[in-house]
Amino acid sequence: MVMYPTGAPEEVVRIGPFAMSVAPGAPLAPGRRGLVLISHGSGGAPVTHRELARHLAERGFLVGVPEHPGNHRNDNALADDVALLAERPRQLRVVAHALLARFADALEPSYAIIGHSIGGYTALALAGGTPRSLPHQHADRQEHAIAVDPDDRVRALVLLAPATPWFRERGTLAGVRVPILMIASYHDLAAPYFYMCEAVRDGVADPARVDYRLVEGAGHYSFLSPWPPELQGPAIPPSQDPPGFDRRAFLDQLYPQISGFLR
Image (cartoon, rainbow, N blue to C red; front, top):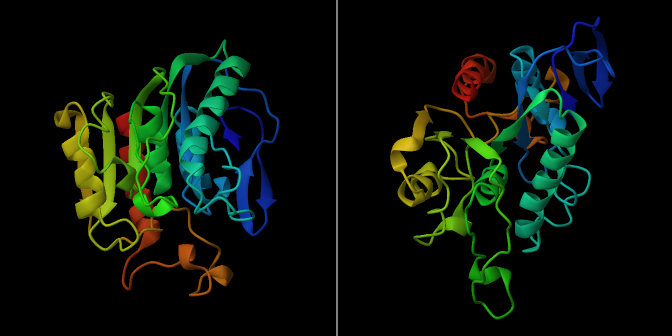
């Protein structure tokens, strides 16, 4: 999914149960702009970040939201495969290369990455991290280096409830030198902030370049665009938030924080 500014009339387009007001195939508005890629979490989909993508496009960015093969809502066969750790950064780099070439006359030659959950891992790996697998991911019960080619075009990262256990060893994030906005929650049981976020703060080259913010009451999926009311329920965990948490109000505050940081 690619979103960008345009002056063309919009229409309501549906992707499954999700509705978006967009102008399909419209020309890109004139001007020089930055590229932002959004990497969804395991079993996720581009449409679950539709509101964030639109918010950024309204503020002048061109936003690419790829569907990670083998790790999305319709095909999650690679979710537990160690090969995914090398594939995800490679996939994002391919998308960046394609968009920077397709819109070369309109884009700055660098890009930012927003990553949710394992999308945060993906962003860190592409920005210079040197991840290592976990022992349980191999038959020999040993950890192994993950082959990732860093991309020096990455200029900034936004990490939302990041999953980072593959950077637990000191030195694996020493190559990450770009500014980072990292937002997590006290109530996240899937990616506990006190482990996942501290690995980033302790591991990057300059911790002063990490803007770290904790949210009260949010769950792991509270960073995603809301589900339609008729689909909100325990059978769809990403539609759920901890009791009393207002996802709509949270996102209305989150999006300007992200766009402000990227600008």
